[in-house]
Image (tube, rainbow over all chains, first blue to last red; front, side, top):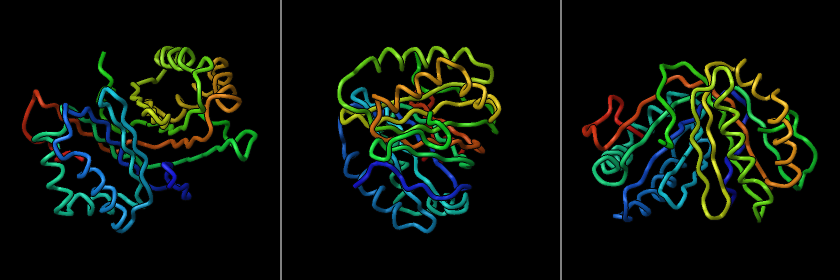
Length: 120
Length: 120
């Protein structure tokens, strides 16, 4: 399965979640897997990209059709419980940003050449 | 130095760059450090967050005052050269999205309690 989200036509919305994990797993891995699974079942979900380095600094970006879809996902009880547990145990710091995607480009080595926009 | 970007008042802009690295360094580390340094000198630069896991999947989000600032940063010659080298050598795939940040929240364990928005 690709770790890149699909490339729908903008505009759409992104939730940018940057976080520093505390030490130890403490159930985090299972919760994170479950949240990815649960998010994918929500109306307006478009995709997710997520990575974390050895120091525990992670960035997860989930993509949604509208800000109303993001608000609805926030109200899913199991998601609310996971957020509470995140503050109680899993994270030492996080930043959350909600942003409207206006333009998007992609490039793959197999396709070769320059993308329309010239990349990053 | 904090690996989290500051929290300016929205609206502002985010460049979300998700990439898969090819094997080997091939000068990538030095270029990445230089681009972070160079970006920080540009007008409208607000901050950057970046992480990459052991499989080479990375997400870098840079923050800017306006989309015009992002366009100007794209035209910096050394940045253009780095993008070209990225496609020639460093990346196997990437996705680039430009998004307008509409809301932002943060939380730190030292401050305790719930943030205004309840987090992710």
